[in-house]
Image: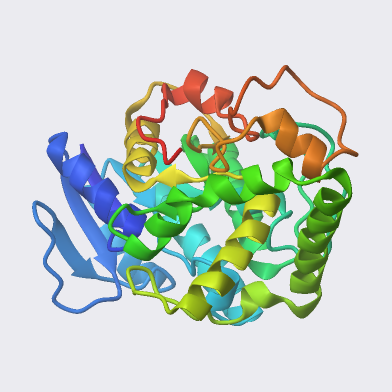
Length: 336
């Protein structure tokens, strides 16, 4: 298959391109870099907001993996995020339709739900979270991912383009040593909370939720991060990072995925036999806190009592059953 990958130079993109090349596909990558060389693939400079240039790159292509986007709320102003993420996505699907391409697989986000980056909290309906759960986006980045899914549905309905929109959680690259140190001991923090006497445990949980609400009010997710992937952190930065990750774990339901498993999902989304447009959650099979999932829910979400099915052991609180059924996705890596 001749495959175009937009934004193929990031953490997910590099793994995805390498996997597609290994599988024997002919891969063209487009991005904003100049003169980039990628093993086994062709690279061309192209801005996805330039429709005519983009369409030119889609000539002779059989399928598209669409990754190019501003990747988080701190990556730009709200208008810039909406413009690049939404206009760019529309351009990709429109150009694909004009060129007769019938398979486009896109990077959505767990944030299409709206719970993590949203500036307003909302009541969750049930666990495990799945694709039927209501969305309530209140930030530009999460809205842009919700709109990506709507765009995919529009072009499926209008032009018969099939594909999945993968709701990625945090994607971890094992080469990021600083993150690896934190997550290697991540479960210990939750075990320590669970082991506290009742009063202290309630106080600690209340403090974490208070930090979460403070983060929403101050829109901390829109501010530049104080660390860079792969960088060594000072002790102060590690403490700040640990606090931020504790809150992020809470509002992302302790999800994460290995970069190689994200690449697996994109490849299978490209090649599996199905029709229509489908948002799919993908994540590792276990929660990254590595503790009993019901214990986590009783600790942090006691007011969400509905279960759509039993949750066993430390299995993920975000369901990947639809991805398993539709594209035969099965995570091969775990950080727990």
